[in-house]
Image 1 (cartoon, helix red, strand yellow):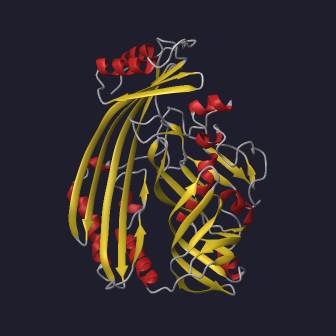
Image 2 (cartoon, rainbow, N blue to C red; image 1 turned 45 degrees about the vertical axis):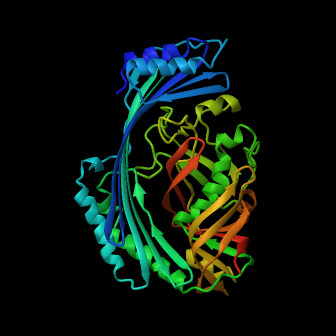
Image 3 (cartoon, rainbow, N blue to C red; image 1 turned 180 degrees about the horizontal axis):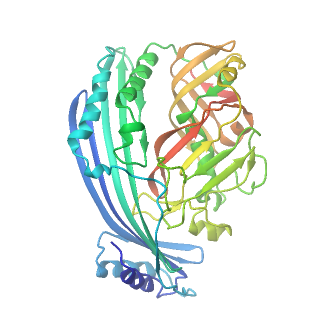
Length: 459
């Protein structure tokens, strides 16, 4: 735990050489994970992470030093090393620290670190039992993870606050094979919540059926034809395309240095009028939500695009200085070994007014991407290439049959104006997002959307 007296000493040391702002972030985290392969528990893993980082600003220059020695001597030494990189600054006026309680908008009923391992294994065995119904499965991997993180944050502007973040997640990965190639199906729900997640948010058997059905369906599917065609992308994890191809380009880490295709476009139309996109950290118990960000700023609901018009960027404290714009509660980091920067939280395309059945019925011939897989994106241009984990060919507005090997190819800024339908049922899916400040939990989401013309890779 970080006390007010110790934090004040560390901050004073950090600005001795002229820094105009200093911050200390202290973390204590417990991680637990279990894995099961084909019905056998393979690993039981526990890890404690404990340490702190000191950050110093001089204008738009930021210095970050971290340590796992959180004694007074260790923290003072860390602050001294950070200060040593700053010379001849104007110096910070240190505001006396005052503790600020962080109201929690994410109630936790059953902390997972207080639940016996045997109860966690029970949930995994329930999923494994459901998988036994599928004869074509060659392998099944099931895993469970939870994390309890406590943070304390103080800075020279007088902020002194803290928070506790609790995450729980369940994974099922099913594999089928025809002897020459494998197909996979997966389900990986999670929330910023405790073990009560299994009472109302996660059904292990349903996860197993979803993963197995997907793997079996794709095993018997013919290859997808390539071409330019209308594409319907389903809700939930379909939002990964917006997250990767557009969301990262709206983070200040890309905008501040001028590396984003959306630089200088605030107030301009960048998408179809049907598109409203939001990054929201205030959604109760959602995977990407927060009470405060990793700079101590209360989380926010930020409209990025409204009816096609670009409204906001996601901005952290250092990039706010570079851009001359206010912070948005978007400063995030994996842990104390990373300096924070602007990151997404729960990022999604908002629900529209189009009927899902009509979206497919009126598309003619094209592709229905029911579930998205992984992919690659070039952040500076927004160019992307994503695999379709579960896809279906559509003929004359009717779903004809499943297809495998499909991929979606395009550029974020070019795809957004081509979205001509947005459905009513917005859903989210969970993932881990990697960027400059490490890997963090984020939600992606959208209702069913239709892109009027898109390049589909296949054979």
